[in-house]
Length: 194
Image (cartoon, rainbow, N blue to C red):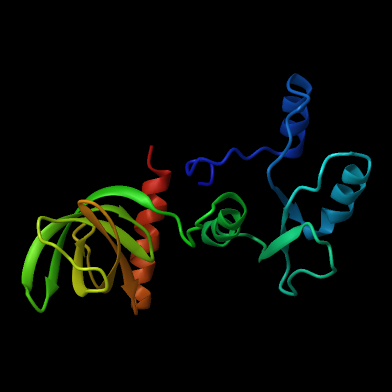
């Protein structure tokens, strides 16, 4: 799924082979099982390159030690959302905590001033980009009802957090666990779709 989000993931042997063709190739980040951290340390000590940030895959105890290259740790087996959150911290100036997918979902919006239709242009577990002919003021709270595929509908309270004219970025508030699960499932399925 990470490769569908635009990340190029290489296993150590594949990276070594790619480096033969391009000797200047360097990794931007390492995903390392804690049980193999010593191997990575030995390889890096023989290299003169600057240290590469590491996300550690570990057991229930979490990360141990004071290796300054380790920027975060996730429990094995690592899930998409856990890895994505940490990877965003390394690669993005304004990181997202959850993956976002492009959509064209119908949605109904309601506020004190009335009710209207619109389209969700992108969606994550935490928010969406909403297009409508009605204006939504920054900071305004609205009720959003999303029509997901297979007839599933989710009602969510959202706040207008930013504008990408003519669209409005909505941040979801107090999302019920079953709604968050449905959103996560939709995002994951969309990423994996051919």
